[in-house]
Length: 170
Image 1 (spheres, rainbow, N blue to C red):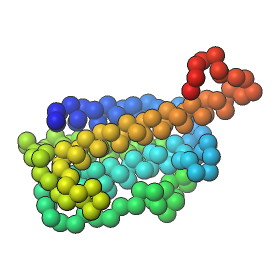
Image 2: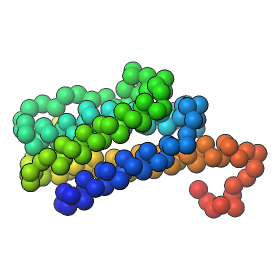
Image 3: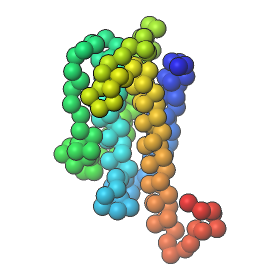
């Protein structure tokens, strides 16, 4: 695994997330394509909580606290229990970006981390530090795709009653 490249990807992903929501209004940030979907605001707050309570923390546990149980997380439940969609867009974005900077500083402070360090995950079985780091980078990409889909939804709404089929198949 290219540890430095993963760090750079996390940095770039943070920038991309910022750019994707730069022109979104508060009202747009709360819109959902359907009741079961997440809004942009919910995605941002999910990323914020995952940044501070999941990936960085759990990677630290694997590397520096082997055998200790991981604190529980509830990413799906937090969307409603923590009222993500009632939060402020600007603050939510800044919270995520600040937390990402903390993560990048922490990763930069690691001196040749043992990415082969293994923990036993209750669902996944043997799980290495490198698995966690790789999953962190890919988690961003999954939510970048989700944010792009939400932007597509907002743009389709914006141009109604006109048709965008000429642009190509979505």
